[in-house]
Image (cartoon, each protein chain N blue to C red):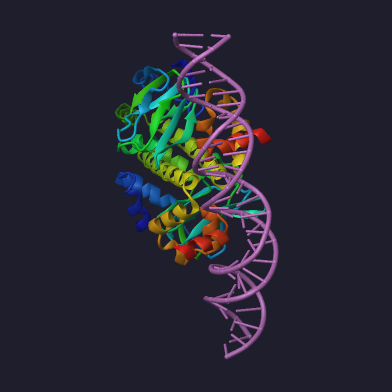
Length: 187
Length: 187
DNA sequence: TTTGCTTTTTGATCATTGTCAAAAGCCCGG
DNA sequence: CCGGGCTTTTGACAATGATCAAAAAGCAAA
């Protein structure tokens, strides 16, 4: 919990009361490798913070799994579309390692917004930062070559190779596993 | 202005006072074709609402213009990264037609957030919706073929072809102008 | 250590898209 | 109606990445 409270300082400094109220609404969740936080067709009612562990988001396209993100320590995770709209998810969120998470429900978060302007501000700012991150990834994914995308990933998250199978990484980069293997052998 | 106030109802219903305060902070801006709302290296200090007109966002990569979005009526527009962080923009925003816009500065918006919890909520919700939109575009751009992306664009914004040169559209889709031309001749 | 399963690499071939160059089409001002 | 500039299309060839198939490497349980 300390890690979570420390982390949110990066977005906005809460009043002690708001911070306490927020902390009281999170519950610890411990899950094993290969379990799911969200699955296609079900509504995702929680937002999670990763204290320890690794996860991936993927969906099925033409019968194949497309991994579109990974998350590690100090990240918030949810099926964003489903959590926001409270409609059935189109994606699956799977644990890549046994993980320690903190969860808050959509309802509790909404209540907190009504009670503490502070907390709504924190979430607004966090959402903006996540938007910027997605925008960068979009540019990178859409307008650079496979090799550039891989090198970029190595620079930004060198640890990823030790925690995630190459097949998932290839999918994440939008290339086939074979192409990724060839890129790696060339570098 | 009526159009703007009508539009924001889609996100959240403001109190009359908040609505009035918000309206008072927007200023009308009328610009000609080919003028710029933002240019690389300059800080983008305003958020704009498009009442009438068309714009594109682009940046320079390896000496070439990469168009990464278009905006038309009833959309908010800014160099998001620059507006949020107040750092120099990496992109350019250019008018594709003479346009009528409403502008609000970052400073005034921040003041409104302090005064009206309402308005901060509206912006939080709008940001979430824009996030979901970007996420959809990301998936579409990264994991579908050029032809699928083009067909998708035709479905979602059939009007775009009459308002935007094909060269920009090709860039937006992440393909060369020649490839787009060949895709069009095949369909 | 051996066996069996999964992950990763390598090879050969094919399809898609990019690049360079030129031609055709279109629009606007004179 | 004509000419010039811009946009769009077409052609030829090269590069990138996908697919199918098989080999190699890694790893964990017996």
